Image: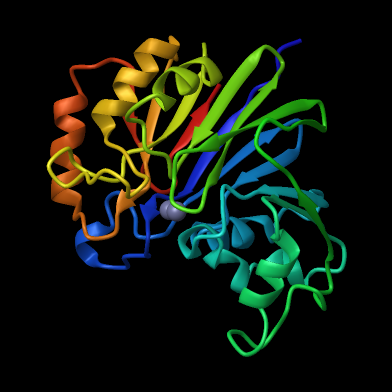
Length: 266
Ligand SMILES: [Zn+2]
Ligand SMILES: [Zn+2]
């Protein structure tokens, strides 16, 4: 029987949070998306949006285990780990997945002198799992595959399959050049492709490791994705600018623009 996948957007910004009144329509928290299925929660990136997810989980004590997949260690993708409420709950089991140096980098970043508490001493049971591009592993009935993103310092893109559904998460990735065809292959027939729509085509700079919504649309079409969710908006883009992009993209049936609190069911 098909299981419903519930995808919740908790953070939509790239680089830095933007808690400004002019950014509240789309949201000011950095990258975080949760996929819930069969009472299991898989989290994609741990930006400041993770804190809202942590608060929402306070009333869901039945969810004991959380799996958090990190695309990379840039600060906008890990900032939510500083005060993530489930770290303080001895009944929770938290599994963190990321590239080489995962435990060392996170313990450094989320420990003294940068922060008073380290992850290591958390009341929750925390495990670190180092993964590499082209890895494939199973998580509670889901298959997770990874691909190297085109990003300064590298990033991991994720593809999640299960119950006949597919979600591809491709943030912090520059679409141009030879990587496009591998991306299209990786994301092939995704029910949802979560895409790095950081910049307008005017602001886009080669080598910064980011992309535009137009590239997401092109990729989504090439990959025959059913929906493309644009997110990771540049921190200095106000709602007005993102709304303009969304209106432009409105003609294209497969594009959606992420807003905090948005829920997509697959
Ligand atoms: Zn980022
Ligand atoms: Zn990055």
